[in-house]
Length: 79
Image (cartoon, rainbow, N blue to C red; front, top):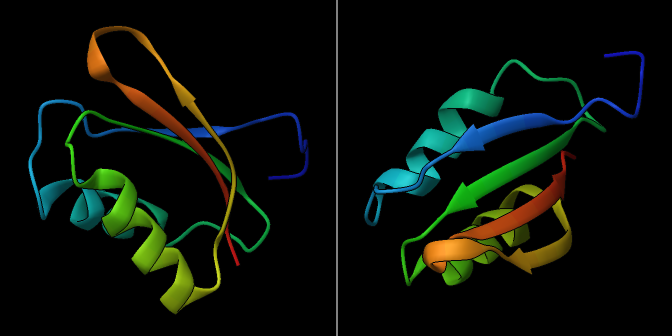
């Protein structure tokens, strides 16, 4: 990904723990370091699970935004 304005999006809306984090892990496995990812989820435990994954892997949550219908958008920069 050469254009840093491009953001890869992963939609995990409607999935419940542990499926959102598993989807995230599967979809990012071939993405290069530094890639920005927007991860959308509505699972109530999603924030804790995603933060734990980022703590383990070194990914960085740049910001979190509450959207409509209980969906949360996380902007993550991959380690």
